[in-house]
Image (cartoon, rainbow, N blue to C red; front, top):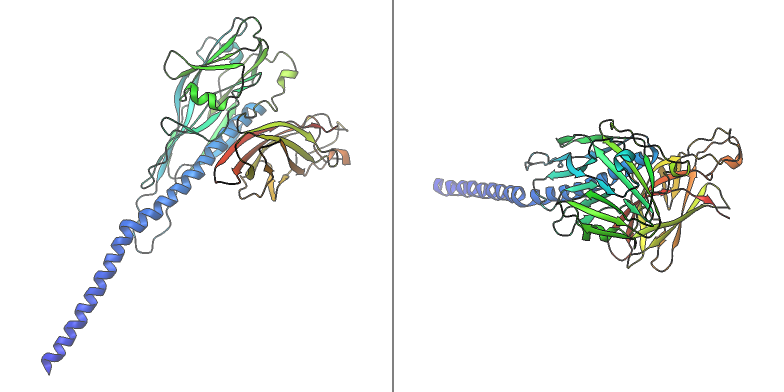
Length: 429
């Protein structure tokens, strides 16, 4: 009888050992397969978030260049994994934001002294690129993101993925934004980036008897640029030297060349030439992207002067819908009915089903207007909070302008396209 009891105890011990072994095996499987997959998803989502941060940083540089006032943006360099009850996480993934030397900008035209326009004097017109690189533990497809010459793109090898359009070459406008500053920060935290612009130098160049060629350093080649520039009077070719692209502007017309230096965490040491007249000092509505979604016009709604109607031309193959937006900046003009009125900047803007704070965060999951492919469609945005002393001053006035970042999604796919628009609405006759 005693031996039979010992056998039963031995069976219970063996069972407990087997259960323990199964638990250990499950923990091991969880650690080896489930946790890495979950962490890869966290890193993938962060990769999308930091891509938006870089788009916002590019928007900040254009806003600073347009307003000639400092701006600040933040970049989530890294992220955190969720706390695991049993499993162990690797160290939090980090990212690096840095400025890298791009090269020199130059121009060829007998009437253009680009160094004088940009304000570098006898010094070379060098510019920096702004680059983000991730250091993930699991997600291995997050290539570097670069900002240069008004575009943002993710390096993917032979075919870079553009995150924004460009406004370097916009019909008769040539907008040069130089970056200066030595920055390198590696962290899992959020980094703040100050964007400090110089005054903007302006020159008018006539191409009736002589073409204008501007050479820029670029990590893109001429084929990449030709995908983003929609101008029949612009020829884009690779320069004989490495990592430069030539833009030759023809058309027997007059081009306006604007140059602003934006210091990254530093004051730019330049003295640009002064604009030749008041008309060219108007920086609004000069930096709108060409390509997929083009802003073709804007007007103040006659039935409600706090509403602006923006007309967009969708040049993609399918209809698109506004899914995210940010009102980056608003500037009051001078053509209000009572010039002495104490008219404030608006506090908020209504776009689709979302209320956007002026200068606030990006609003996502917007159920906004659809822009079809057949004809230009109107998109409305309504501002509130002017607090003018007269009723006619509680709205948008001719001479006001604002900066709007939009994200569009194709209605039949998840593909998105973004654009930063400088809108200077006129009175709707």
